[in-house]
Length: 116
Image 1 (spheres, one colour):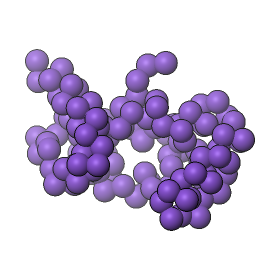
Image 2 (spheres, one colour):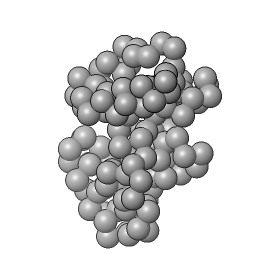
Image 3 (cartoon, helix red, strand yellow):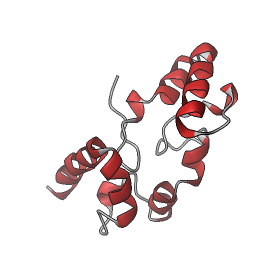
């Protein structure tokens, strides 16, 4: 499977929600809903676990991604990822990348390709 990189640099293709959607697997969706509800203090249901990737042009994205400021910013600027942005990196990304440094690495690789 080809890596799908989200707006902020996370690998959608490695995400449990994306994988459950791709496989159309309700059992996996249920497992992810239970796991993420515990991990993030949320009340997720099986039907909440549907996502085609936040920058794939689909309206089917995970609930948080629908309201994600980084995603909304990229959409408003017509960018597929934040790597394309002249303001890269911004404070919103910095906060996320402190928690998930690999997301920054993914965007840096994309940015190097874009700037060549």
